[in-house]
Length: 483
Image (cartoon, rainbow, N blue to C red; front, side):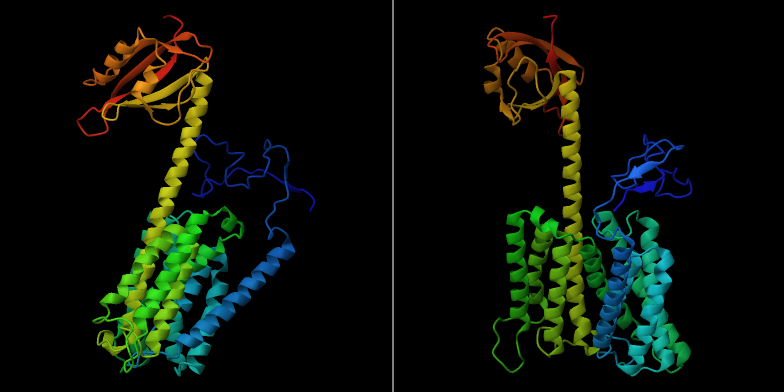
């Protein structure tokens, strides 16, 4: 592919996402591909060919066609299966994963393409509702329009507060998604009930929550799974920790096996496990958290989808702790969706907490590398002394080849590198005088790699790791030619 000519344009001031961060050049914004070589505004710059398999026009067209076919086939199959189980009062489906598919498509696509996805979903919804769900055309239109309003509102609110519209990898983004989805589900249930009353004055609005529960659980399971797998790359498996892969595999097997054991209790047959109602069904959910910690978003959402398939199929067959439950107007599928919703929420929150922790560790590691580089250039080191542990923590390298361990170093081991005439003074300086944050200085001599002693200066002040309690010292150390 020949090199593509690109011009580095200044970002528009109206776009919140296009504004460069503080200290970044406006001619070379960070949102350009990493392989773009930016030039002055009056020149052209070269953009190297990217390795993205969808970078060529033909590949992009093929990718869009495959996405369209997959969306159409997936929506039609899920809708046809869901339409077979409906509420006898409102004709609402008892579970509705197609809404999650539409919502994921809206969250992954720019707003200018929403009309296409929504029109296709509405057409499939009405057609399958009439043919499979035995609905009249006005009732089918009410449910289709409610679905569009629900998914469109949730996706719009999601984009309003989120800079990365297709990501659920932070706790803040995950909680915002859950809140918006819950509020939207309630509003959608009320809207569906009002719409049914409008087309049929005798329709009852008592079961408005059937649509809300089906929409919420269908989206909380389906949408995160599609978002996670849309960013999946096969090479991520090669970069995965082998131990985490095995732990996740064992936990996923334990989850599905435990759920099968709990739900496989035919009414007239022998029970493999004793239980009194549906409380014991929540026991295997412990493994959901383990899978989320070990495999991340892609693996945990896939496992939750498998859990929904196992629990839902057994419940449809009249088996399991929810088959004969009296709650939710005697509809077992509504009852089991509370169980599946809890599993999905646990998976999402655990994954987000783990992702936040990983990002914090990466930022800390990056800052540590930057600080080490700065200290290396300045010829100084940062140190910390904790009195309760009697250990010294070092960051950086001292000149003259003076040995400084990367790991915490016991005070006694480090004092062996100090000149014997200075050891008592150093020990007293480190273990006393932590009552004030005032800067303190100490000159000493340290043995280098050449066997000779070199003058150094340590500066530091009190360290407080506990409120109102000083626990040690921390500061800098470097060469002191004035000794």
